[in-house]
Length: 113
Length: 111
Image 1 (spheres, rainbow over the protein chains, first blue to last red):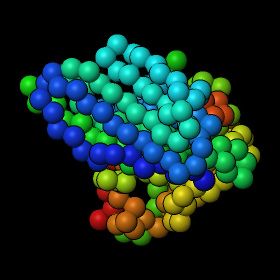
Image 2 (cartoon, rainbow over the protein chains, first blue to last red; image 1 turned 60 degrees about the horizontal axis):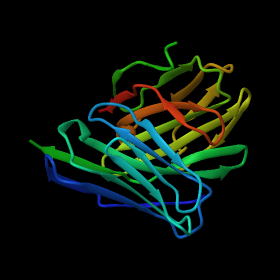
Image 3 (cartoon, each protein chain N blue to C red; image 1 turned 90 degrees about the horizontal axis):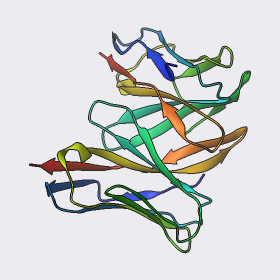
C-alpha cells in the first residue's frame, strides 16, 4: 500500500514560535488526512485534503496538499502549550476487502512556556 | 452516543497467557480496525474488517486473531502473549476512506 514519510520526528519550540511538519510520498495520493494525539490520548481527526494545491485553515493551523499530490504539510502559527502532542499524516491504502489508513510515524511537538 | 469504546483500559499479562480486547462502536460504521502503537513506530494496522463477517490482515497480524461479532463489535485476541506484544492498542471505526474515530486505547504489558 501507499506509504508516507513524515519529518521531523521531534520538534521542541518556545511558545509563540511557529511549527511545521511535512509528509512525503513517492506516489501520487488520492487524499491525505491529518490527526493529532495528545500525550496519553488517542488520535483525533483534524482534516482531510483531496485537491491538488489545496490549502485549508483551522484557526492557527494551516494544511497544504502539494500540486503533485505527493506531499503535504501542517503549519502552526504562534504555538501554544495546548498544541503539545503528536501529529500524524495518514493515507488510504487498498486492502483485499477495502481500504485502511497507513500512518506516518508522526511528529512529536513539545512547546515550552 | 459513546463513539468507540474499548475494554480493558489497562492489562498486565504473563508470557503465554491469553486475553481478548473488546471494541464497540455506536456510529453504524461498516469499517473497523485494530492498531498497535509503539514508541517511534507510529500506528500500525493489525487487522481490519470492512463489514460484519469479513476480516483482512494488516501490516502486523502475527500473534493475533480477530472476530467481527456483529456490526458494532470487533474483538482482538492474543492466544499466547509475548513480551513483544507489549504496546498500546487502539480500535477505530469509519465510513470507508473517511475519518477514522478512535477508542481510548488499551495499554498492555506482557511480562
